[in-house]
Each structure stands twice: as structure tokens, then as C-alpha cells.
Image (tube, rainbow, N blue to C red; front, top):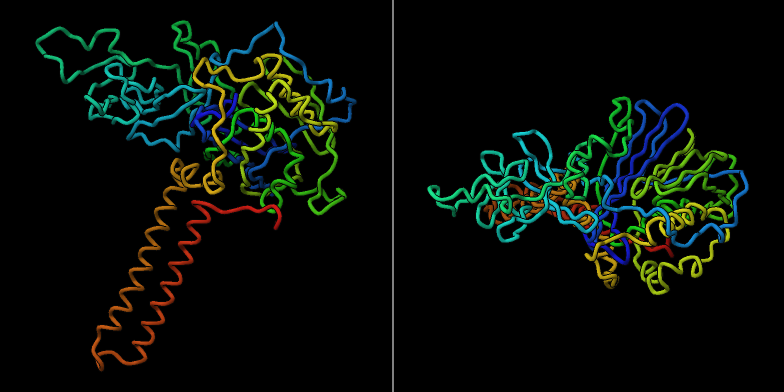
Length: 478
């Protein structure tokens, strides 16, 4: 998962909840630096509720007058500076992690390995390199004593990062495994809301950071009266573009027409086929920690907790349905061509529906210098836009890292093979059977059954491809 542009490639975790007064949709964004950023989503809604919400984002609007959008964006301030490496970052939902093996992840440009320490019964996040020859520990294994073992030379480490065994060291010689240089760097980590979090800073002063500062807590995820669905998806564009997209509900009726939409209220008049309407957003408070907005009409409060948590709310009665759409990278290339600092000059944002996006750009410029701090891990050059089939890939971007989808994918593939085998076997039996052994009617039935099973296998293969690999989306014909 690598970054595109001057952007942290986010893993976004969408969480939706519903209570008696409002429908809340918080969203987590977890940054990776790979051309295919990892993303996670979660759907949460009140049990026994008539409201169901699917993948979509909403924001808050206000009736209060706002400053013109053009004046809302500020230049970089010389005051407070946002520290990207002094924040808790979500890594992965725990149910998409296998306790039997280590997992490689890249978050905010850092290669980490996530593994289950059964001796301490907790998830650990290590620097993904063995101190011996820098081999990735994520390609290793968990040995019979519950230690993380490097696959290159078999060095073993406990949950504290201490080296416990070097096979090549003479047992009668000096205990070289106890040397400080033999240890693996361990990041502070914790599990909250069924998500593994880590603090991307190895400074000793942050060793006990969990005592001083905890990750943002979302109580509804742990509330048994809510149902919860989590997942993850790699998206091939960067942090700024994804955040803007999440904060922009005005694009949903058009960019996601037919697959993702907020169901209109009964009193809402549709001016066109898609039903786009004026939206008035207002930033209520903006500081180094993010911003929030105020209430208007059917929309409720929206919060952006820098740098990765976006929480949006709807009142009861507004629902959303949908799936996915194309994730474009051309927009990111165009912004990089004009320069992120010139965003306000290059983009014409005259309506109040863009207030959240403008607020985000204002926060990014004022407190974060206009971009993610990569600390030299990223050159700033965007890779070319991938082919459409790669851009909208489903297998490598989601299925391979999702336990439920991966199990379904394997099951459907087994069923497809069985259908083909039965089809071929039926034809073979019908052809090999001697005349008189089976009746003509039975032979005909077997041939028809073979054709039916073969056709079913082909339909199933098409279903697997469209749902687990690639399904095109052409806006012109939606």
C-alpha cells in the first residue's frame, strides 16, 4: 500500500450507527504509502430498527450564514504544527487478521508486521525487519513457543521484541541474542473497537503513551444493541483526495448513480434525474485537532478528527443504499499538476456544499503544511493511472484480505469446479455406456444434465468474476 501524490494513502474505515434520534456514520482513515491504499469499512445499525445504511457518507449542513467559500481557505500558519507521528492509527479489524500467521501492513509509510502473541494474548505491531539481515518478519511464522520467527535464518523474538533464539549462535559461546542490536523495534499498540491500533513513533518517551492518550473511542461498535459489519478495501489514490470524497455528499447522486445513493426525503423536489439538491454546510470550529459543523434540516452534526476519523450523521428517515464506483486517479494527477498549494485557485467552489472540503483544505494547509509528512519516504512523483480493470479490481483490493469474502470466493470456485466435473462426467458416462445398458431417454437426460451443469458453471464463473474480480461502471449508460 503506497502513497500517491503528496498524500497518505488512506485505509478508510466506515462505521455507521443508528440510535433513537440520529443516524451516525463515523469513518476511520488509516494511511498507507502504497499505490493501492488499504481501506476498511464498517456498517453499524441499531438492532430491530427499520433503518438500514450502506456504504455512503453524509455531512452536516447549517442555516447560519457562512463566509464565502473562497475566503475560507487559509495559507500555512507559522503557529501550531500537526505531528503525523504522534497519533494513534488504525491498522486492521481483528477479524480480518489470522492469529496463526504474521501480517504485513504499511501505514503512513512505515512497514509493520502485525502478529498475535499467544503468550501475552494480545496483538503486537513490530517494525517489519529482522535486525540480522533486514528480512521482512511478516514473511516468517509463529513458532511452537508462540514467538515470531524470521523465515530467513530462524531468529526468534518474543512479544517485547527481545531476541530469544539465534540458531547459528554457539550455545556454549557468548549470549549474542541478548544484545540490544538483536532486538526488534516494537511500536505501542492496542485493540479498541475490535480494531488493532498502533502509535507510529519509537521514541522511548512514547512507550507508555496508552496511559496518557488512547485512540478515539466509538462506543456504538462495542454496544451489543448495534449490529456491526467491518471490511477493508485498497483504493489507488491518496489521502487528500479520499478525505475530500468522503466529505462531499453532493457527488453521490451523480458519481454513484444507480449503485450508491442517499434515498431522498419525501418532501424533496428532484430537479433532475439524479436528484441533486443545494446543501448548505458550515464549519463551526476548526483547530489543529480537526473541525465540526452544525445542524440543518435533516442533517446532523459532522466531525473530522484529524487526521483519519470522519463522523457524519443523519436523522431517522434518511437511508442510503449502494455499493462501489470507480476510484479515479486522474483528478489527483491534475491537482498535482497545478500544485496542492494552488488548490483554491485551480478549483471553482462557489456553493456552500463544498464547505467541508474547503474546511479540510484549510486544516491541511494551516496545521499540516499542505501535505502528509512522509519524512523522506516518498519522492512526490505520482505513478501513472493504472488500467481500468486494475483500478477497479476487487480481488487484490479487498477479497484477499477479507476473511468472509475470501471464504465465499473459495467456496464458489469449488462449486464451479464441481459443476464442470459433473458435466464432463455425465457426457463421458453417456458416451461410454453400451447400447442397451442405459435407455435412450436416460442417455438424453444425462446429456441435458451435462449441458445444464456446464451452463451453470459458466454463469457461476461470470458471477465470481463480476463480484470478486472486476465489474465495469460506465456513467454514460447508467
